[in-house]
Image 1 (spheres, one colour):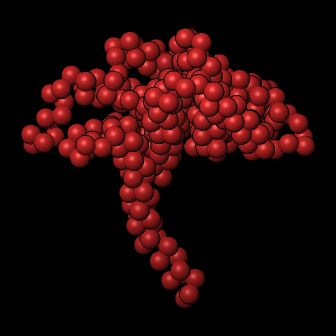
Image 2: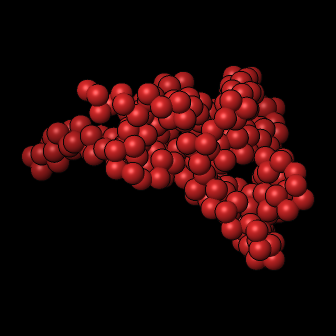
Length: 283
């Protein structure tokens, strides 16, 4: 069993493990609502649209998290405003803002000769370079996200399953949608510098989608997603250590792979019931 524990004898791998655990819990809470609300495209757009804010903050010598938060928050607000138009679908609004902000971000990067290394970190993250300050930030983001998820649970449930009924009951679905966008924004911004924008999407979608195949209650889906994310972190770090692969990418790949394992298990579980149903119809 030495192969399993050897990587975690090194301090920076232990730091990466704690970071992965916190990111997994953070993405489990926000990602569950992303999956249930069908907001995957929005999550992807927000994670890439942050490039503009990160690039500007980096060139100005400001903390990139501030730039990422402002950029992602601006996109979330823009989506909520444009979606009010009866002539524009939400997907169209997201696509327009996604393309516009990403294009501007690339333009800013192209005019900076010293941004290549930072751009690599933006896209792929560096989970093995996590500091104590990063862990504190992730812990604070997790606390805020958990508090918002608990306080807004009834609103989010109504929004996810029957927005019209929520409006009839006076539950203000528009306000709930804005609050949910804020929840997703915090999760993405807090996580992107750990696993990168291209890879945070795997942890945001993969574990909750896998858990949703086997669970029906929302708290159970969140718990299952957190456990799958933590398993992905441990397995990804071990594989990365022994195979000399990129740690963040390996963690995200394991998370997506576990979704397909869960999907296959769900298919095999339902197969006898389908066969019985077909046999009943045939008779």
